[in-house]
Image (cartoon, rainbow, N blue to C red):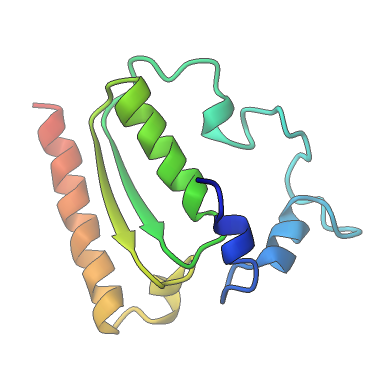
Length: 125
């Protein structure tokens, strides 16, 4: 279930080398607290997910962090009963919309972002 780091280790934009920079695995690149148990590292580490509001997820298929998003969405939806909406962008890398905002898939992300925000606002009614 957790395969994206290996499957997408050579992805465009965000790859294993970039992840290593943020994880402090490369010298002088300790950009994030390198504490695997810190809740600042991942929302999955939070003590409780109970009573969280609905959540909207956008997940890129060619992203080494893809499975973190998919697993977190599943935990919220299945384990906590939280309403979620999930849009997946198959074959696209992390942050693709910043590089190709006018491509069909970039416009698609923008449209789905608006739909997702509308969905979130409707949940609070």
